[in-house]
Image 1: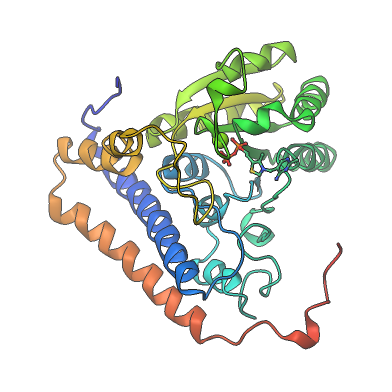
Image 2: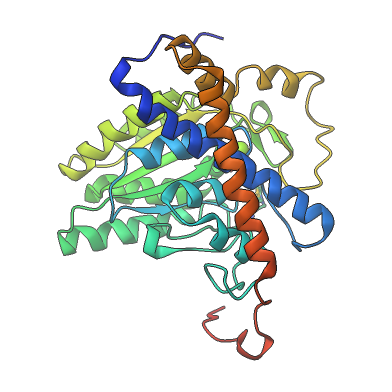
Length: 326
Ligand SMILES: Cc1ncc(C[n+]2csc(CCOP(=O)(O)OP(=O)(O)O)c2C)c(N)n1
Ligand SMILES: [Mg+2]
């Protein structure tokens, strides 16, 4: 694999350590959720984003307050990178009254708009038209905010995504279409679903920019998102950014992954985003102790948040029908 591990400039190191902290926090959050699901503390389906952390950390580091993020069911990492407190996320998944949606949303349907996280969505491709609506509202309000809609490679074959791109392009909406290409749609590899796997090229059909980047390189993600965020704020119209990545776990918790070729995950672990950023920081002169300290800080945050979430009361049955619209 061809990617940069060039040393960072001295003044870029402290920000890179923050990015590392965010990625470690997402990783620990997902591992903790997996454990809680295994123990039965969390019920229902859970989709983890382990291996894709650079996308969330890099993108959110380039966004501004007021911007709005729309993710899929694989959305815990986006939420955390948006700044949603880990305790609120864990409590939500644990169906606690202290969850960000008071336990009503669960793993695949929570939102936390105070932090710009406009929510997950389990209907593949359905977040994109909603993001167009948010971007249209921003244009009318003149608030300069952008909308980011994230979805998978499989979602690129949904009509809703094509319709949203066409509408956004024609209206020059400030929407960033982020395709998290992990090369699988559920249990089906991309080679079995599309003739041309260069998904970013589809943007041209709608008269908008389309680029493919290395979604495992947090700096590349940050730079690209910052570049296009500025273009969007300048009224230059939407963009499709295809971010190449891989999930290191199953599609959902419990997926045995028997459809994956032997050795694929082992190989991917050598090049996953956290391993790579740590190596780049080492080559930039950062000590192993400093790197481990970020890891320990992340673990402490998630462990303490889990403890507090578990101690909170379960969502009240008496009020569970309030604020439900479906
Ligand atoms: C409209 C719709 N069709 C089918 C499904 C079932 N489904 C859930 S996830 C998924 C695969 C999506 O793959 P991709 O877009 O690549 O996202 P990833 O899970 O890889 O992040 C499918 C088909 C669904 N939830 N919604
Ligand atoms: Mg996918």
